[in-house]
Structure formats: C-alpha cells, structure tokens
Amino acid sequence: MNEFLQTEEKIVKMLKTVFDPEIPVNIYDLGLIYSIDLDENGQLEIDMTLTAPNCPAVDFIVEDVRMKVLSVEGVNDVNVNIVFEPAWDKSMMSEEAQLELGFL
Image (cartoon, rainbow, N blue to C red; front, top):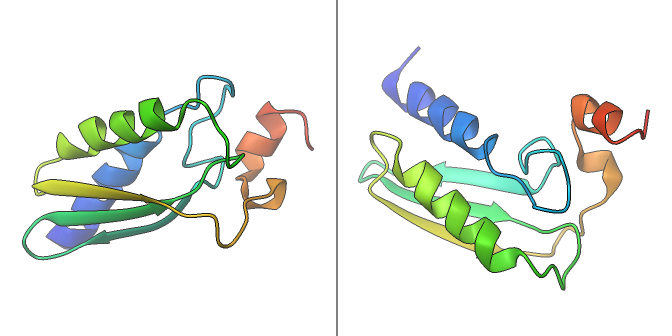
C-alpha cells in the first residue's frame, strides 16, 4: 500500500473517533463526510455535512475533526468545509450505523 493510501486510511480512522454529541454513531459511518482530499504538501480539505442545517454542535464537531486529523502524520493543515449539497439522509449511513440506530 502506498504512503498516500496509508495516510488516508489513518485520516478515516481518526474521523471514526468523532461523534455528534446527540448521536451515538461516528460522523464517518453516519455518512457526513463527503470528501477527503490531501495534497502533496499535507493540506487536507474535508467536505462534510450535518444531519440538520441548524445543528447546535457544529463548532464542536468541526474543531474535533480538525484536532484529530491534524494528529495524523503527513497532515499539516486542515480546512473543513460544511456543505449541504447533496442533502444528507439516512441512506448515506453505513449498514453498521443503521443497525446501531435501529433503522435496519
């Protein structure tokens, strides 16, 4: 496995430790992460959404994402973009998340 894929795998692993305080499933398995783009200089761009546009925990979640992915070797800076297109829905969750929340 090349170094880039290993770094991306570590980023995903860290994202799986970030939770919306109101939902007992991590943001990655919830399907809130739309894209992860790491350039050769270690600049990471993450596009993510929220389960609701008026989520009161947005600042907490974004800061948690930033702090955790910055701990990954090879990541020098992080920009988290909150997007609402496409709109999030339950079908974006992993099967594990759907089971955890009782949707399956």
